[in-house]
Length: 295
Image 1 (tube, rainbow, N blue to C red):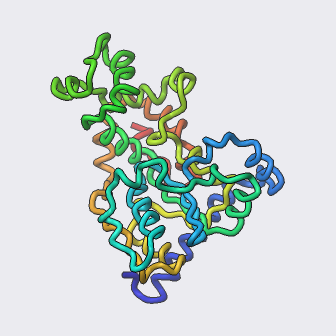
Image 2 (cartoon, helix red, strand yellow):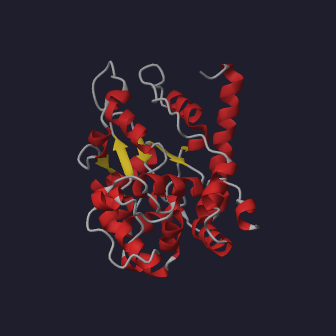
Image 3 (tube, rainbow, N blue to C red):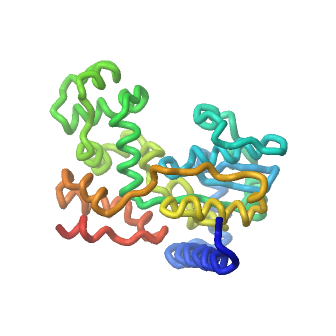
């Protein structure tokens, strides 16, 4: 629990700093009129990560690999009647189903605008390079049939001298054949990748998923202070007494852990990768990883 008013004041100040940084980084490039125009012309699938809770007046932009399954659990429970059950009792499969939630892009434009104006809008972000490591571990180090067929086979053929990779994920997993972390980075940096298909949402840049220069978020949480930020947000939403955010135990990372992962990635590729994710670093207040870029 937060310790008294002083702790709360610090967290409120931190939120103001995060939101101020977004305002400064986005600048005056997009006026209110421009925002309306952009929203009206934006393809609906660009707003597919914005979950709407009409009951509590909440819009949550989920970013994969940033505690999004647990936030979806919370939002799923909030749709039910009180007393709310423990979010950890909800299966991850249930909250990943596309019909579980209402999304902003399902509403007509006037209703979208009204909700954006009046609802509390929040997102949670993460160090961009740590998020990439998490995506790689989850989707390519494990036996993941969908990602094997859609992405890993292509990576193995193009970057790992596997002209004829195993036909099934099961066989590849049994033979310990999988793209290396460097193969994954090569895939991200390859200009052919996005020409062929947009980045998967697990490694698409966070600002491209949530559009923080178009949507003025009321709360910006960080994975690095997840429990504290989640508690603070539930307090703002006046939900702290009726629901608890699930505890997280595996989010602690340190600089040496990240360095170990990037040791296999050549310096020039690291620098290109930073340029690819630079806007995420700058918008969300993550320092440039100089030790990785100056070796």
